[in-house]
Length: 140
Ligand SMILES: [Zn+2]
Image (tube, rainbow, N blue to C red; front, side, top):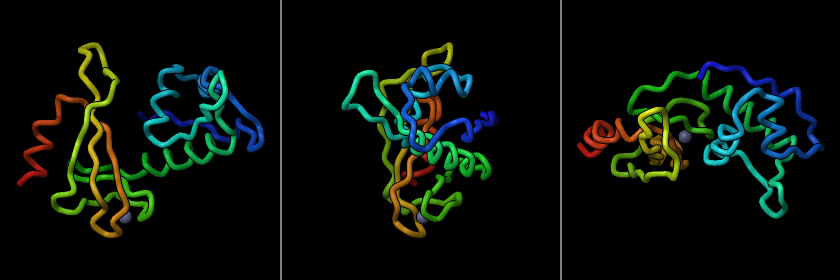
């Protein structure tokens, strides 16, 4: 996950489809689709699905900020505080996404909570392998 994406390759006022974005950044189209769950805006009114240049740029910029701060196991990245934060007690919840990860096909889990500092909703992805540990950590 230490890959650097060059947002300057995109034009604010252009539109890109998933495959074009994948090609420009040399990533799998599946990765680009996954980014929608992480907050990348996609225009689903049309086929193929279009992504605005300025949206992909904003998304990549945020991704860069996220990468810069290492999260502890109990931490989330808050986009408002722009920092690693802990969540409010009892705000922890999780759901399984439709995605499967890796060779073992572990299901992907999205964990959610509210930033302890500002109350913003925060989310973080995990593999289902980790969910038992996380649940213990947050429910006590
Ligand atoms: Zn916050």
